[in-house]
Amino acid sequence: MARIGIEAAGLRFIAETNPEAPKTVEAFTRLLPYRQKIIHVRWSGEGCWIPLGDFELGVGFENHTSHPSVGDILFYPGGYSETEIILAYGSCSFASKMGPLAGNHFLTIVEGKEQLRALGRKVLWEGAQDIAFELL
Image 1: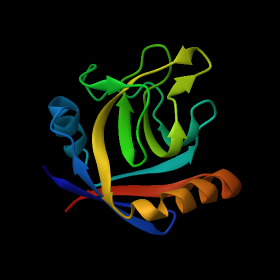
Image 2: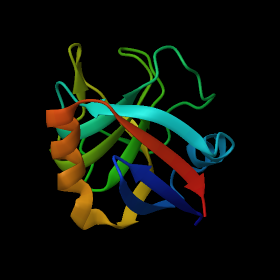
Image 3: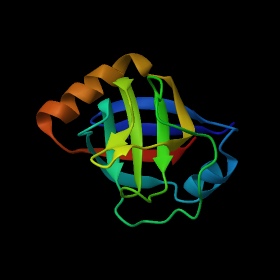
Image 4: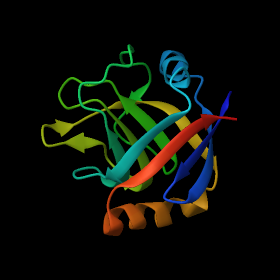
């Protein structure tokens, strides 16, 4: 498993890739280093997301779930809603205005998990924040 460094809103995390989503992991790691903005979810509960519009990573569904655990990062390849990455910092049920969605669980935060709630609060109350992913 590869380790990915994540910096968001001035907080540092380390994630490990999920072997159950090999195509998503391979495609995403080709993008590294990757920088975006992260915003708070609207329909999914305690999560933050990176809206990607019509971006295509070139992968379909692998190990998709609608119920990520705290620290899980999912990639939704699009379809019913826009392409996105979602990070659960608390209770999360992945959804859009069209209803439930499911995304590939491709990263899991293994260090810095105790900071996730602070990230969620900052994004909720202060708006969009920078996020960066890099291969360690």
